[in-house]
Amino acid sequence: MPPDIIIFGISILIAIGILLHHPSKTLGLPSLLIFMGVGLAFGNGEFGFVYDNLQLTSTIGTVALNTIVFVGGLNTPMKHIRFAWKEGGMLSSAGVIFTTVIFGFILNALLDFDLITCMLFAAVVSSTDAAAVFSILESKKLKLKHGTGTILEFESATNDPIALLMVIMLTDFIINSANGTPTALSIATSLGQQIGVGAVIGLIMGKLSVWALNNIKLPEFGLIPVFILATFAITVSSTEILGGNELIAVYIAGVIIGNYLKKGAEVSKHFFNGISWLAQSLMFIILGLQIFPQQLMPVFTISLLPAILLILVARPLAVQLCYLPFRQASWRKRLFVSMIGLKGATPIVFALIPAAAGVEGAREMIHMVFFIVLISVIVQGAAIEPLANKLKLNLKPKKPDL
Image 1 (cartoon, helix red, strand yellow):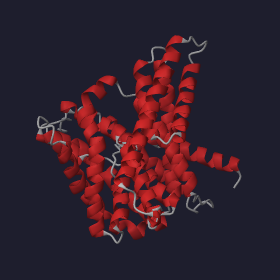
Image 2: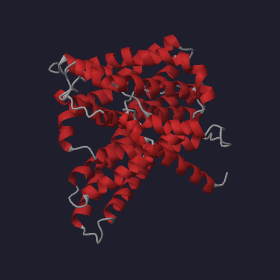
Image 3: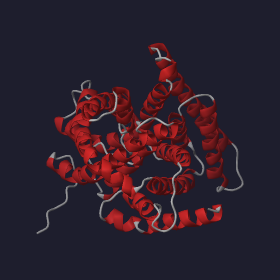
């Protein structure tokens, strides 16, 4: 199909998704469901167009995810980081690992996959989704006590890098298992390189960008977001070249730029919020196009129990383990955080990595992950407000209708 026709079609789908966004927000539905629904409806042969390109979908998803995380960093106030870094940092690091291990053993008992593949599956769905969390909290106008909302937002904005590291390492392990089992030293070295290189590059690029923009007078304010966009692209490419984690790098760079830029900060945030929406809508629609409804139904029933056990067992256990050092946190807060681990498009993007690499059973995994995400968004998304009211965490509970 000619590229101009593809661009025309994708643009129409994005426009349809945007027009449906307001009604979905009124109903409290994340934009994920709307845009993916548009992709599912239009890309599977019903209109003479079939899209099936795992490599391209994975690339688009990765670029979009980097963009979303970068913009999340730009919009994260430093005071939120100072408040939430201990609890949120524990949830976004150890919480991802605990969830992966617990859910991996659960999947191994339920499915026909071997233990390593089950751990890979668990790593794919181990992180929570920033876009889904922000969307639900905003649409329901929830203000939670004890900074619970801030901690959930910080966790969801920072747990993707650890999950991605685990997905990549487990995928490489499965693909290269014929070449021998990696040693603990090689795993630790790889993790250290990914985290260290990503953090250093993010710090350097963020500081350089802020210094340049604060000290060099540009003739047009409109050039500031363009310069930041170039900084973002340099951060991503240099991190990839040097073997670091791109998500860590862009998040750190985004936080530094968002908090310390003196000139053009507001215009830049508005510009990048628009870029983030473009990235989200494009990613969700491409994911919807990539998933075929006729292939979903055979895995629907076998996805239900894992989804329920992830929500009711794996996530709560992982969160309770993470909160062991924080005895001062109320049981209400711990329970709420443990029950609200919203999934979004990120796990589907992560599921594309082993599928694009040719891991056996990865195609089936994508469809199971789709249902796990769908169940999480519907069940946990609907439970946020009632649970917050029940646990008396909502600062402004809605008055009952008379």
